[in-house]
Image 1 (cartoon, rainbow over the protein chains, first blue to last red):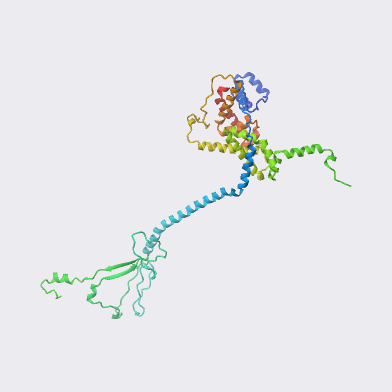
Image 2 (tube, rainbow over the protein chains, first blue to last red; image 1 turned 135 degrees about the horizontal axis):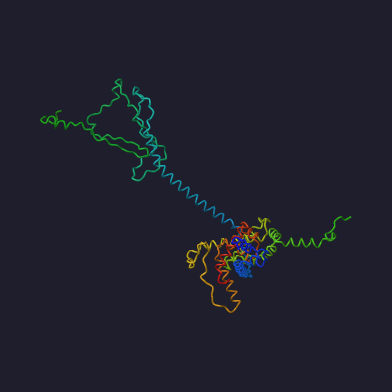
Length: 243
Length: 213
């Protein structure tokens, strides 16, 4: 008996319903093949056992409990939106977290970007501007501020922590590419201030706004012409009051 | 002249009335009536299928209380979805499909919940669930009823160890006696797949039930 034939016969036996009569060919094969006969007996026995499980009855209060469940569902129908609402709330929470995170990340990345923007503006040569002359004394040409700032903004104390976010646009001008003002001989002498010698006793102070509302004061130390040193090294025997 | 004639006068009243009666008691008609708010029609549907569905889910899950709960959930879903029901298949196919899906969901939930199993050492590599730690008693039993009970328990345990994809078609075929075609529609798969799975499920069972065959 060929193995293929046995497989076909067993498959056919498998597909039969329990107690269903097999075809004549299958019956003929079972008479001749002991292995298939044994398979059929075991299979039939197994299916009898499985079929003997039968039907399990529902409990007597099945209908009552089902009615109660349906009634509860009907009463709670107004709250059926809760699963949807719960999903909506979860989605809103996720969205909120995402937005807050995006804002924080944007703040973190914006600070260096602003600094680099300022640096770029410093590095970019400004277009040549017409050089103003001081020929017209009625129109004094004040030097442009290094950093544009609103004059009404109060200077804030310098703190060690990171400065607050700048809300106004930061403008910087590069004067390195600009020509200095030309002072010609035609300028009247009135333009030049004659400083007294004792003015060097005062320190020279320059106050600057750093663009963040902070006032920076640069103090230039008192100018010394070195007269004392010259007297000591040049003419040691001369009196100290002589030049 | 009255041109209207009654059905009785036409002479085929009994047959027509019988058809109408059968139509009103069919599953489809009962569900139609349920859709219109007829509670009695739904109660009739429940009384027709409650035992079948409870038994089927019980064979799938091997847990009677859970099976009753899931059977009730099946009917609740039928009731809620009565408006959307379409007569594409038989109602029995429809309700068995719901019950199958619920039972399989329950089995998967249990599998997730089972973190540590004492029987985990006896799991097979073929994807079957844990074997029972209760081998068949080899001692002879005098009472044939006890023998039958023991055998039924053993086969129920053996079925509950089958993978779910083999379990459902085997129960539908060998316990409920449904046709391959209907099983294929319930499980939403092909008839060939159903035959193959049933054959493999019987092979598994033969191995597990060797002592009883």
